[in-house]
Length: 283
Image (tube, rainbow, N blue to C red; front, top):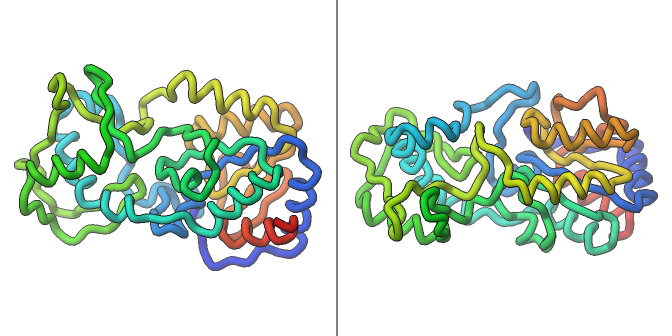
């Protein structure tokens, strides 16, 4: 959901503070709206529609070398900005709430690791992490920073047209010719390299799914922050909690897939609302 300069009402913040204060096992689920304050764009507008072209599908990435050229050609441009992003006040407020005992588990749909950098060390990365790369052949791993050096070495002078930052650590490049872009293979087995994130069309790793499901099964309240819940993995966790009569609150702007399940909506910018919430709770 798209954040904006919106101030939450005192009543909605008071209701949210009461919910958090009385919960013994609050689970927080965050989405792209939590990181827009760090300069990382989100995916959807306030109506839940895509702002950009749909992300790459895993079957296309595996099948078509040209898709991999376009993916890594955009990624080499977008990665420096993505890697330089820092946690914002919303990330820090959630970490502080966790340290104060108000958050029992934090599950994020984001792949930027900003929650961990803010101090939420036990955050569950539902969709993986962009700072790691894995080989689909031998399962070797390397850092995305190291791969950036290889990409730059293979593609000296790669200077596509002016780019707008993309939500997946890539860039929106209009009119770029990727035909000569060189994509590195695994240095150990020659296999296909892929960021350690869950692509559209790919299943969440079983261990991650179990951890997130277990956290939500223990929840006596759920707080959604900055997510439209249009992606089924996050929506299903929230839906199942609501079916058990667990109250679900949401901070964000625009519609969500779970609007009919919400007990409370705080229509506001995520960072501002979370900071105000922490203040109300004396954190």
